[in-house]
Image 1 (cartoon, rainbow, N blue to C red):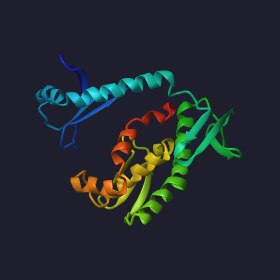
Image 2: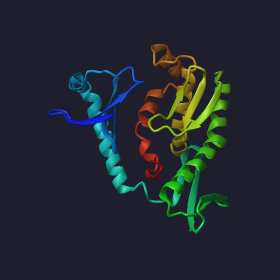
Image 3: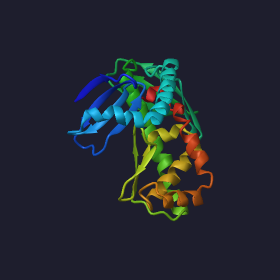
Image 4: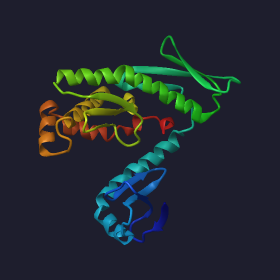
Length: 243
């Protein structure tokens, strides 16, 4: 359920009513614009005042969104990549394409870090899905063991590790000790991947961002503030075709 409103002094936004939402959430992206997610029965007349109180957040989000728009204009998301850089594991891959009449799209790893994608390579969504599956396997092979080893070294207990394709989070931790890591981590530098891992491991002890959480994180990573800042700057390392 959506309705677009032109707010005089703020901006256009879209309202989405969510039966699961307990609180109002704001989401902004280059493609969707500003979306206000509200609980069922929420008084929409309260939204302008809420946006005014979130003015600082909105300004920062708009700045990032403008950067995203420029990024997608420079690198179209439907352009097939010729190279894929996996900074987290120190690998650079060349990608070759072989068009055929086969109805499906397949991939095979070749020597010298060359990936061959063959079949109906004109099908943009097909080769995108294939590349994401390939990245998923890479993350399972390299990132999951890395996180488990780090947990052992730092004496953290985790239940299991999942690899997902979250849109907004680098990782998350459940109350049951399950850590979900985003396959996009494979694109960013190793020191920032390690920061994400340690951050989530601390959540196995403290499920919030309390003073105790930050104190624990500070003990393990004294430069965590710098790492956190740098992490907010690297989303552009994720190639446009992933989106």
